[in-house]
Image 1 (cartoon, rainbow, N blue to C red):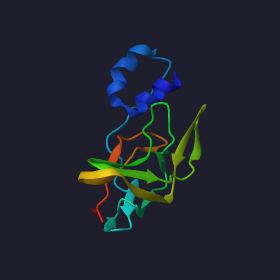
Image 2: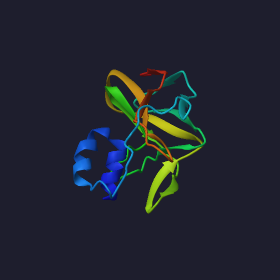
Image 3: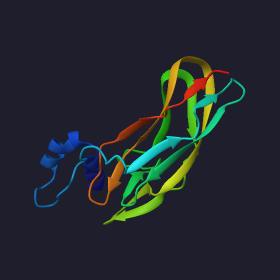
Image 4: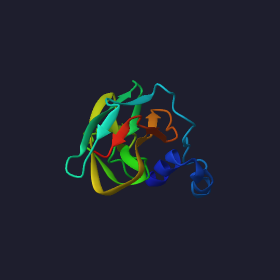
Length: 165
């Protein structure tokens, strides 16, 4: 049942199905509610340009600032939660490897979830896995929550250029 409740909190489309499965007196659940406030979590990169070759990967850091009263699901979040991810889209041959920090354990009733809070810097390595194709874009995907609500997932495209070197 807890896994269903987590899915409900993170996926508003599951609302109708879960309402049919759950007795009305047993649970009151709030699903994902719109966008998180703009200042709830902010994502920055410290570079304008990275260069990676077949032999030497590009290295940079992503800074995440999470406002007091909010948290984001960790990279190891499970059971239907949206994990924190740094990845590459729109191109081939480039892979992002992030050294995610240790999460904080947040207790919510009988549940314990792994989250990130406060400020953190995440080292990222962009590695050429094979021939580079297209225009790879590095993005960060995360879900902001407060004690009262889980917000819709957010995707932030990092604004820097990549050179093939």
